[in-house]
Image 1 (tube, rainbow, N blue to C red):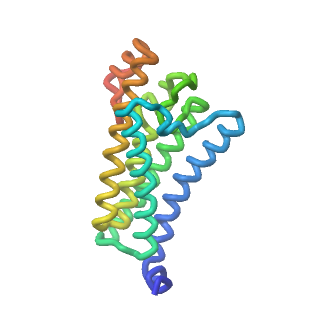
Image 2: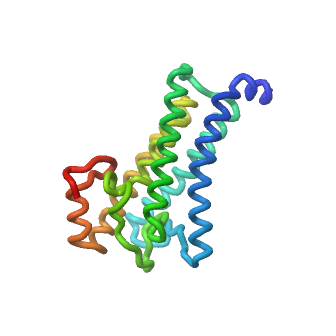
Length: 203
């Protein structure tokens, strides 16, 4: 039965897997590369302040559970969208992958998952960060939306929304951290570049 579903759904199944593989390959390759240089990439849940800790744990649960839902949807071919929408979803997913890759590359060794407690990082305003204060999160969102468009069902709708909302709350927490850490430098940057995408005027 699963084999027949896979055969019937094969083109979009493969396209969805490509989007997911590229995205998580970038994530884990970067994490492994930083680990080799003695950098602990994952900082999620290490801070003990209750609002921040709660937000990061919920974000972690959301970003883990959405992967499970996406893979189940792909495996069983659960979708309610026409081919044209699914194709657009694939393109959006690839754009998300590209933006996430650009964000990770531009961040260099300052990239962290979660808000660090003691790690010293630098504020990054070059490259793709000239056009978005949070391109990595934008990449996540576009990847989630793209896969949802390829495999639209109630479960992917709910968990995609949950993941995007929790990522937004994480952004708000990180903005507080960046304001406290970098002060006027971050305030100036924040006044010129939009949270998700766009520039208010030239840097």
